[in-house]
Length: 328
Image 1 (cartoon, one colour):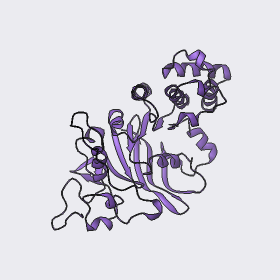
Image 2 (cartoon, helix red, strand yellow):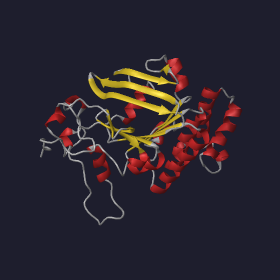
Image 3 (cartoon, one colour):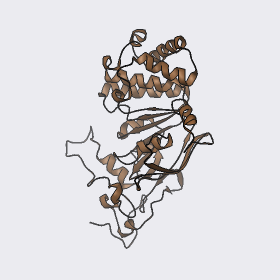
Image 4 (cartoon, one colour):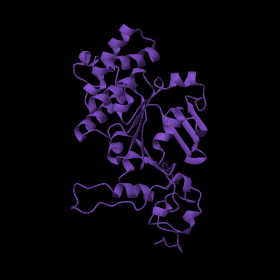
């Protein structure tokens, strides 16, 4: 698969406190990648840093190359063309991302004029087509509506239409269904799948919902404490998770078939970035930790010789090494 985007050694620190601790990923043209993990693990920060959307307080190092071109610390004039043009992002809360005092037609048209150099009349016609494409009924009338006149699901569809306006090569969807009910959530996810198939763009889905990611994505990255702790094909996510954190996330999911019982919860919380534990960041919460976990430098390693499945754990898929006992 042709590599479209390559991120290498991406690190982010705020006020000298590291929050992203070395992210490496490659995104292929037309690929769908899921990124999962608890809040504060670095999923959204990865892409905000890559697109130059963090504040000046953030110290960003590493490399972000789009089709071979370095984007990190690129001039604002160049990033303005990339953002919304080659890479588009759908944010979690459309109510805060959309301008409440401008019609949705004006907001979509603005993106079209900026990235595709259309005149106002042509842009409005294309905005109507985009609203039709994302499944908003009576698109011609909705062009004159304000965000508060639309439902949450319709506003999310408007956000998708705006993202598609620049005909991007990569679409990043950051928790696009969090505030929506289950029925609308399914419709939005199916819409994203259809658009990806129809346009051939790459899709990055950031989510807390492992079920959603497994349905939409081909490949999954699990993040914890600013690190990638596991990377695997989506079809293996439920059957062959290797890292204890991934297993914990899966164990916390309710089962429709099993008898009713108290849900499992991973003990503790994500570590504070200013008081990060040495060694494996998950060790303080892990029921398989051993002494060396607090000294080990986290590193992804292939499992069973399969380069598609990598985990950052001393145990891998095996039991603790002979002579070492998991901590109580």
